[in-house]
Amino acid sequence: MEREAMEYDVVVVGAGPAGLSAAIRLKQLNPELGVMVLEKGSEVGAHILSGAVMESRALDELLPDWQAQGAPLGVQVNEDQVYLYRSQTSAVRLPAFAVPAPMHNLGNYIVSLGSLCRWLAEQAEALGVEIFPGFAAAEILYHDDGAVKGVATGDMGRDKRGEAKDSFQPGLELHAKYTLFAEGARGQLGKELIARYDLSAGRTAQHYGIGIKELWQIDPAKHRAGLVVHGAGWPLSEHGATGGSFLYHMADNQVAVGLIVDLNYADPYLSPFEEFQRFKTQSGIKAYLEGGKRLCYGARAITKGGLNSLPKQTFAGGLLLGCDAGTLNFAKIKGIHTAMKSGMLAAETVHAALQAGDQGRSELVAYSDALQSSWLYNELYSARNFGPALHKFGTFLGGAFNW
Image (cartoon, rainbow, N blue to C red; front, side, top):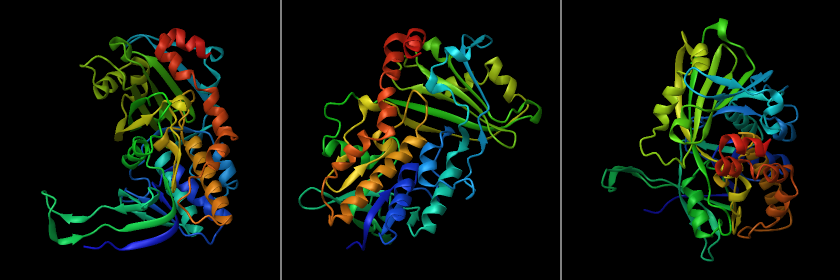
């Protein structure tokens, strides 16, 4: 059965911070562009999970009046605490001078990334961006010359053997002059593009972690809005594994608590989920959670190799953005502002090409130049050895190196 096709100037895959920032910036630069965002979740934000402390730098550039527009940036950080957990009952709080500068968070914001993305989607739609939630990009479409042509959504109405049922509907083809891929960590299509165009040639192998998070409603007497707690050590240290933890005091007597485990652990009996459950019994963390109620939970992959593992992001007909490429700053444990900036740089590059008469299919090498002259590159460059130092020298010596 022939698939229906729709034509756009730019198709964006993924309604996360990178994809939505790209869509907004494109419409700011040229309201006449046809821009469409494809989102696999049932609604924008449905597949967004993050215990997040956010720098507002990229948002300040994208939408300078975000405060007046009611952006849900939540609570501003007013206190930082960093602990080395030695056991279930013992922890050492590091003095501020001993904490590497990138991990200082005063002035940043504790946010719900899902709420932020829903708000960004509203801003995008107000500018004329079309957003299609509930449709996953299942296939990349290519021109005969190998350039990306667009994407196709998955077929609906197939049985368990893949055969078409009476209700079968073929996927929809979305053609574009340029397609921007912003699926998030380990995106299915992003992995295909990296392999097809050999985008990781000459780069260090990508590093991954898994972040497990819970949202709790806690006793108001224990809540300290704006407090950010980070930690390392127990219980992962018992397995020789590396990672870190967080506890963020949000608004409305809620806290986000989580554990990030690097996926290089050698102990076959280590379970990140079970280690997270153990972490919640650490006396300092338990004190906040006791008497509270867990509201929801989830997990997500984290692309954390940084600049050394950042693949080439350009190929004929498109760009690879945000965590689909790996723009997270591991030293800061932050990737929202960097993903947003990558999307904005992509939009500016695509707009300049189209304005110059480009009809698509080209490799937008100007993006690489724009990236290297931006604060995003400078930030990733300055943090390039943070993760490698921890992995090579361990938490103590690696932390000293980073300090």
